[in-house]
Length: 199
Image (cartoon, rainbow, N blue to C red):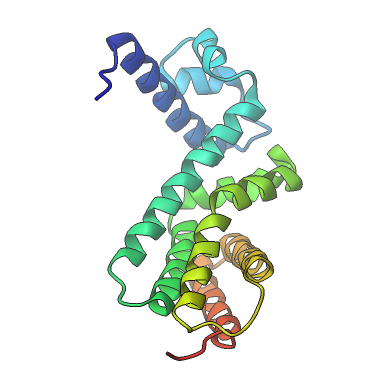
């Protein structure tokens, strides 16, 4: 068991405080209008402290984005934990991902700002790095159980993940995100229905 020093604990707590403050500022003001001074003030730390942890505003935004996406993946993992079979886990995971992107207004705002702040390609890379592995595993589990039609797993995972990300972005940008979330979930269920081979 590794025991952290007080200095290390303080660094981690300070970094977490900066991330939380930055998330709030980006959600409220937008990426372009938010300054490092704004973040430092909200976190009650010095500007130098923010720069100690993050080289610039873009790196800070990426860290916030990754942090929120990691929490979303944790929520999805919790949602699928109690499901009985692989097909139920896949459906629950897709629903939980959509719900997680829509339920929190701050998260919705971050998702909409991310392509402009980081670039569309970098956003895609981060999404695939953090979310695609779980979907790939879910599909592989379905295949092992004999509940997936004969399709190449890697291509199927990428296409389905792309549809999921687009559904999340579309629902989050809609003036009525809760209603749009239900519509998006229905579309995803219709798409995935053709992939299911009942055991």
